[in-house]
Image 1 (cartoon, helix red, strand yellow):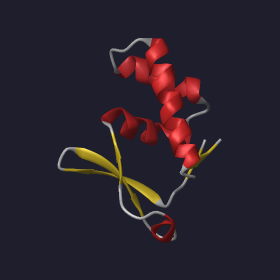
Image 2 (cartoon, one colour):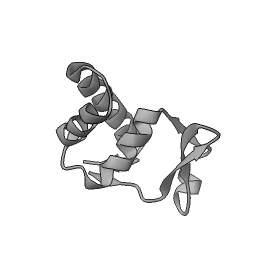
Image 3 (cartoon, one colour):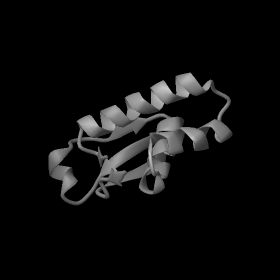
Length: 88
């Protein structure tokens, strides 16, 4: 999956945010708060072959049901696509 490289993940006081830099500063105003799992998904995206690839990695890192994780990852990726942060 192709990630918008002008968004940088940062941890600030225990919270995770995507910070627009460069040309995206004009397109996005403010920071995008993400959960710990959202931050982990963002970290995995550049090397992810598919949504299933991300899900399989997260299943080894978190104690969660596969169906719930698949749903949550799909929703998160859908939001990222909606805002132009990733491309399939």
